Length: 340
Ligand code: CP3
Image 1 (tube, helix red, strand yellow):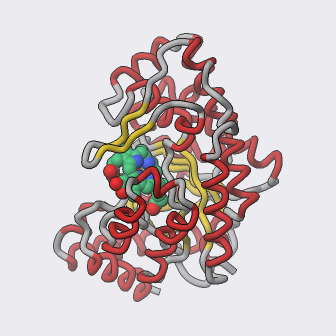
Image 2 (cartoon, rainbow, N blue to C red):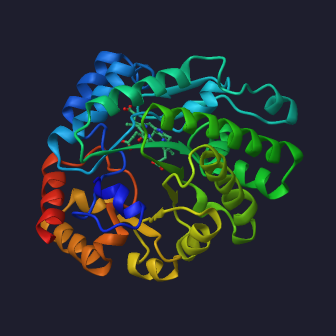
């Protein structure tokens, strides 16, 4: 079967599965070409044929076990009615919400055709994959997406954290709206062919321990529950980046099949804290792909030796960087495959 799905279902895989976060992206010259053809990042996200093409590009070069849908976590607030722009070299610029009336004005995402276009991409990708490769769908977790909706872009999340701390009524309503819309968005991806989903909580590490349950765990659990109400037992990967010692708690509380790990935690150490049958994903530093290849290969082997293939999906600790040489990815794939 598909090695990544085997690991998620606690079945012995035929080999250790691997994929790379942001595997379709600017480090690939063929991605930059299609991106230029599309005219902008967002146009690329909403063009099913081109989005399918860039989703497949990394699979043509590298022996990966999964394709991840090419889209962005900010597609959800965009479909809910907030203006969105990606300025060259500046990251996202999103219209903000600041009150209960702002939150009440948000739509359920279905009055635009944005979700439809993404679902169409999923269907096109699914029809093009070889039988061993799994298709990963995704969404952002409510906290991370809410942080962009409150801040308006990439920042230090001081404003979002202060809103979360004060916990006004509108913050909880916003989180609830994101839970509902994310469930709709994911169910559409699964219907179109996604075989597992990853929930990206990129800024979970900023949330104080005392608020983790309310801000991170409860919303993710509600999304997984909503998905599994329609697709019982559906496999889910939760990437609560930066929570360190709390990955075990998050796995237990959400019912995730695997937890994605940031680079600076011990995969073996986290694995010991997980419920039986839950796997780890990660966690090579993305910086190591920029430097000496021997050091990268050593670090890769250390991760592979530390956790068994049955409970591990090899990945980076965060998305691959734009400056990464393609040859470093080739070397990395060889190191994982040579290990056996
Ligand atoms: O992993 C994949 O290959 C699938 C595609 C994917 C993208 N974004 C494409 C993208 C996925 C899964 C994401 C998730 C995403 N988007 C996250 C969570 C993961 C993480 O990195 O923590 C977040 C926080 C975002 C929001 C976002 N999108 C930011 C902050 C930026 C700007 C930063 C940057 O790298 O430029 C983006 C843009 C973005 N998303 C690009 C890609 C390929 C680059 C845009 C371009 O091509 O110009």
